Image 1 (cartoon, rainbow, N blue to C red):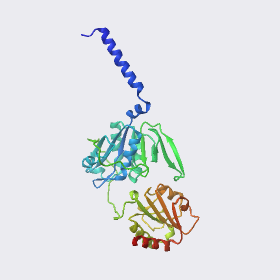
Image 2 (cartoon, rainbow, N blue to C red):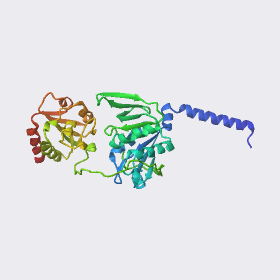
Image 3 (spheres, rainbow, N blue to C red):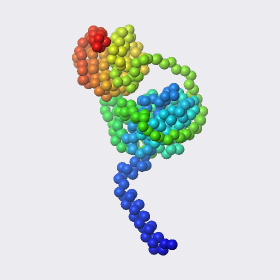
Image 4 (cartoon, rainbow, N blue to C red):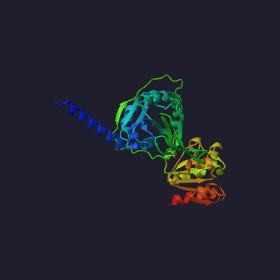
Length: 349
């Protein structure tokens, strides 16, 4: 048996060792151990939405553990696929057809229950139509303030986001116990979907009755790349003057480049293009390798949605149009002549 003196000495040595370990740990690493992020993964028709994978990347920048969350009628099988995403330690899955269509009214109480159970400090989702509809409701239920369209993460409580239609950039610090973020898809690259080995667990399903139910949807199908994630985008604006001219000039040019089609708000409001094609502050944010636009003057609201494009090219007859100030390549001329000419040259190559 050990004497009382040796017991006391051992306790002292253990205490000193723990103290040295605690003091040697940097404040940043200590805080990181206390952080935990829940990344909301969107799915449609049993497949993961790649646009939501930026939420995982954002969670990794915050530090600490990152868990994924998925819900729908095939929630568990999709969770097995999501478990391969690099950066995730765990995937929570709720299998219930009530959550299949992403209705914010029944998703909000579902998410709140899982946030509370997991004790998460941060919740991150893409700044998509789904995320923008869901997170304000969750924020209201948790009595915290949502942070929208985050472009950069400075620390676990400090974030950068645009204001005034992207004309100014704001750095904001949040003291809320739970930070709710929607992150800009073009600012956070999607996490790799292979190489991960996350565990899969069943999430909490409160099964709250919702006054909202899914009725139907009408989708416009296209073989072209999806606008939000396309590497090339061709956009048309009010300068095209009519829907007939928009349809005559823009789709052939997009097909010649293998590009997605976009439009300015002015073109959408004038009925030239469907609102699902709108690029800008109140539309989609895009950051393709090439953004080619014709008949777009370059209003600040439009620039807010495409200024992160790697190469910006434009065609406009007005040499003083604001679009030329941000364009890498500009062509001053009549688009009704230049666009068909460019299309033919591209096709001939």
